[in-house]
Length: 489
Figure 1 (cartoon, rainbow, N blue to C red):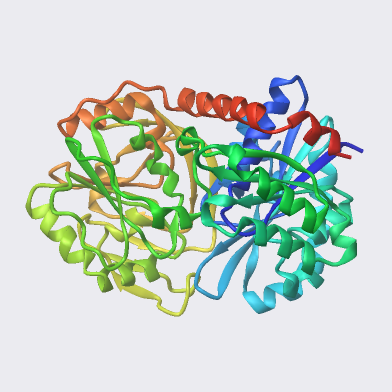
Figure 2: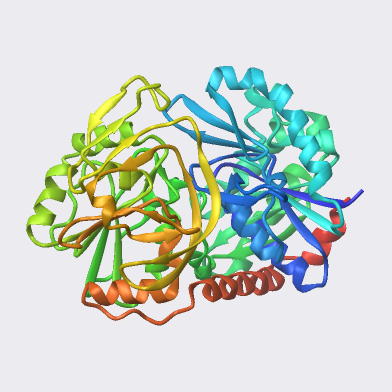
């Protein structure tokens, strides 16, 4: 059996995703064949993993896509066998080994978990084939003992697969000693035996000041400390998995071009905007609900959505439709991606109620198109070309729905030989189903020039690789990585 180690957190958003990516890159740099694995993920930031012998692909969490890059291997549907994509506050679409298998409310989903564990363990057996080590990421916290009886994401998986666990504590949010000691107290003896130690993440300042904290944690738990990881700013270049990070984003210093992105309630694949964060002429602003779209924005991007109609209704409830109309009157530009593209049309129809009980709503009317939701889901990696800017594109499609109308006669791109998207008659509004288009350097540069600013000429994919290498070097300095890999079994 392939050796494995698992990182679980004392809570959500403690930095597990980035730490797993970094450890994957460390292992790769040491000459190991390494794979990532996450039994269950909940995120609307999805990626497409190609399936051998099939023309379309399967969905996995964007985090496991990043971790596969860190390993220098192709993403696989078995790296994240269960993906939950929230559609409402109480229910999610369920993706099993890359394919939609239905949807369920939270309470009903708990009853499905024993059957889903079969898929988890099947993928677990496949993902490690040919690897020296697998680095596993948990979800949430093992301290949620009310969920333990049917758990497949944390200790339920660890005990079933006999994978040792390292706990991750986030010192930046405070209470890290209590979080670790409290986790020790409430875990069962069986689960506690799986833990081989812990590490501290996101430390600011002189790490030696926490030596007494390490002594206190050892006194309460007996666990060893694998290290204290200082805050790493290079991690900002890596795609984020969870939309919770958007709530902490503040606009940077004023720059020549402000790009405003409304934070939709069911925002999906918002890492489409990541390449703009590194552009020196661009100020990227995520606008929280209840706040107006800034009137000095040169571009508004409406991102993807897991529930187009629900988010369109919320868009109006926030008054963003009026803000967007004013933006257009000032001559501003608008881009819609996937669900955002659908919102820009005249109407969105869902006659089968795929997204919910509301089966039709008016769109924002900035493109002369209409969308009809259909059961067949498009999931594929693609190569494309921008027709407007005559530049190569690459990315992926994950969407329901078919969009047609007069403005489709001015397509934005050709994807695998088929025209995609729509453009307004004045060229200032366009929509597309292509995720990842802003990661294409030549296209991004020409697009920014059309908005009156010069692109920075950066190689975005190379910047991600550089950030992963910097992350790996950072972990080598501050963690006992040899001891972490030695703890794997």
